[in-house]
Amino acid sequence: MSSSLAFFALLSFHPLFTDHAVVSESHPRPLGRAEPGEVVTVSLAGSTVKTTADASGRWAAEFPPLPAGGPHTLSARTDGEEITSRDILLGQVWLGSGQSNMEWTLSQTKDTEADIAAANEPRLRVFTVPKTSSSKGPASTVGGRWQVSTPRDAGGMSAVGYFFGRRMINETQRPFGMIISAWGGSAISQWMTEDTLRARPEYSEFVNEIERVRSAMTDPAANRAHEDPGIAPQAKTWSEPDHDDSAWTPIPVPGKWQDIGWDFNGAVWYRRSVEIPADWEGQDLEFALGIVDDYDHTFVNGTLVGTMAAETPAFWATPRIYKVPAALVTSTTVSIAVRAFDIWGGGGLMGTPALQRPNRPDIAPVIMHDLWRAQPELKLPSRSPGGPPPSTGALFNGMIAPLAGIHLDGVIWYQGESDTDRALLYPRMLTDLIHSWRNTFNTPALPFGIVQLANFRKRESEPVDKSWAHLREAQRLVALHEPATGLALAIDAGEADDIHPRDKKTVGERLALWALHTVYGRKDLAYSGPLFVESWAEDGGMRLRFSHASGLRVRGEALSGFQIAGADLTKWVWADEATIQGDTVFVRAASVPQPAAVRYAWQDNPETTLENAAGLPASPFRTDN
Image (cartoon, rainbow, N blue to C red; front, side):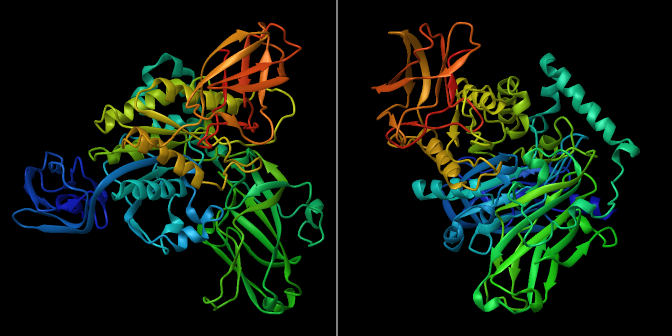
């Protein structure tokens, strides 16, 4: 018998029920494998049940509801074997999914040093599902392990998941387990079941395009890696400390340049300066650059200190650590330039760069996970789209289906940046995803919290019609019409020049407010900003009524961000007047004497001037359809 077959023949727990797991208190249902037909006796928190492995060797042990708390021991035994998982808590189990903003870790998030240092919360456990794409049907299991929240491990946890779980624990005093299953750059179609996508005629053109892209990727000529021709003549001075990079594009590090819309392979330069402690001047240093996708030339104060390319095995996954001789460290300001060459797929600086004193772990490094400046040197045709391999249902198969059988108490979803060009189709797709996941986890009213996209890109001075506004509307409409869903606004938590806003605490805590109010009965907590309800013409203007409007008020100096159009809906102008009365806002524009529609915060990066007494911002909306 092969080792893989032997593994599945042995008694084992599903990875979600191994050491440090959180098990749902209301539906404890440990899962595992054994010999087909074998009787398995399972014990947890003083209760014991028996179950039988099915023809494929899978078993599930159904317990009655058990009191929250622990730690407990979970054991399973057959006639010939016994296994044990330790430090098990009974509590609440939530799934966090989506793309990179759900993946984004606590250590990548601004102002979290104190949070990480104080992360001794044994009731918070996080299980991060490894990135797995399957185009050959649902996978049966996942890798990964549970991590307990400690200062050592918290920095690598999903920031949104961490802040959500921490707030939920503080308010409910129950253990919380967060399962994070996310992949940066992923489209919603990859998280949907293939049956769902193929069942609706409105998806056919979209599905066919995915199949064409996947087919093209199997063409050896289209999939061949690019070769680096070397630094171009015009870029020879880009490593110099005094090179003027003021016109270069701000770019988040770590991250891929495809995440800011640069859809090409080739060479991109990254630059920044950093201040070091005074006593480091004239000392040998190390530059821990981290992983570069794929090749790099790295300069410190204009001097090449290291390079890595195809001659290094697994160059695309090898962290760079380059020596910086004392002779280069001539002041407390250090200039760094990195030329990254991407041969295939996504490219960029993927680690957390840091300058450090060699062999001195007692001295804190100077960390540079923030905005750098970037400039393309050579743009080559993209050999592969960014994010996971394109395939209908591939991430559902690899990262959601293997979780089936456990009980989830809720889901939080942060995704949509990759689907702004499909915003009009997104309400149907998100609704279908919610229904299919509820079927997968056999929970018809599974709570589903949706993060509305954050503000991003340049703020426009004139009314515009932008795709990010349409995607936010899609998210709002799903939360409005689909039972047991909710909307957590991030419209004031984004950054104009970063698709990965560093403020994840606001997002996690707003998701928690929604969950506490709607799922856990905390009716004393305001959980939503003002939501548009209805409008009508009045006195040459339009009056707008809102829900969640207790204490409706102006955020900032003036109420703005409202635009008005007449019946043809072709020319939009800013409102001359916007005033609050009770749970309504009256808007008027002199140039539109017969207004027919109003939009608010309707652009990629809008002003947010309307809020309620809880300080929660109003959701962007439009009255026209």
